[in-house]
Amino acid sequence: MVRTYRNALEANRLEMHWKKLCEQEQRSQKRNRELLKDFERVAQQALVFDSRTQRLKAAKVFGVQCKFADFYSFVNCLSKYFHNKDKASSTR
Image 1 (cartoon, rainbow, N blue to C red):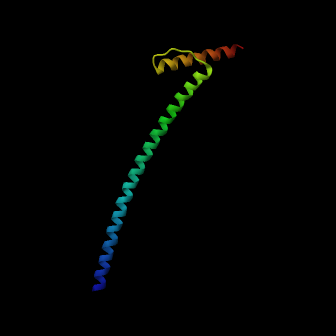
Image 2: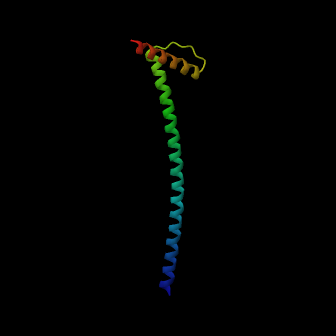
Image 3: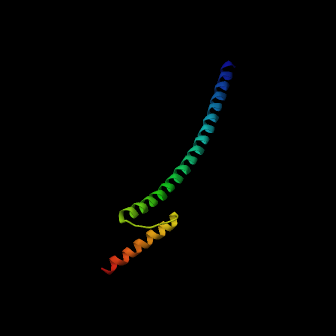
């Protein structure tokens, strides 16, 4: 009888520990999904910033002289510069 009682206590303790581990695993999986979403968002922002940086570097290297009020007018000016440059190189 004592042995059965001890076994029941041990089984109860193990079951409680198992439930705790399952809950902890679910919280960890949820946190990992959130971290993955954050990482993907940061990676997308890095791509945007990289493309902007490349355009600014190109403007600096090729000596584009544009006066612009905002980023979009700068991009417009830069695209015109490269379009004109392509025309000039294709006529040579």
